[in-house]
Image 1 (cartoon, rainbow, N blue to C red):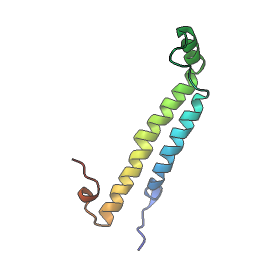
Image 2: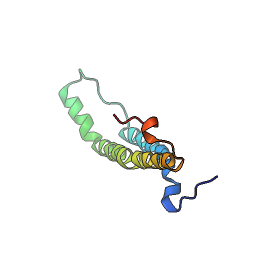
Image 3: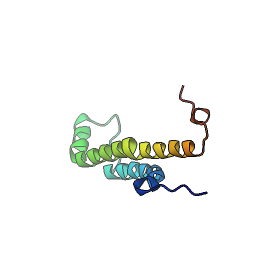
Image 4: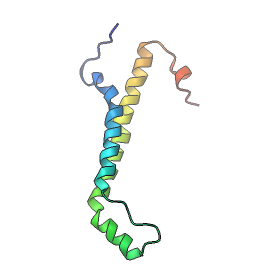
Amino acid sequence: MAIYRPGWERFAPLGAFGFLLFIALGAAAVGESSPSGDAPAAEIAAYFAEHQGGHLLNMFLGAFGSFVLFHLFLASLGGRFAASRVRTACVLRLR
């Protein structure tokens, strides 16, 4: 028996895929790898000055994916458990 969920609730389970996509896009936005820990301070400062936009985009995409899309997925998962009358405490032990 299919559960009818109008509007955005139909697409809430896709939040997990969106979360993974945003994390991958954020990692790709940074670009090349950072300098090693024993590199001179000037080289490290120059790297972060050149890649500031990529790091900001990485931070934004990671935060949006974590706080919006992943929680949307968890809410839809909880709704599925409630709809199927499975006791959530047995499946997800929160203590």
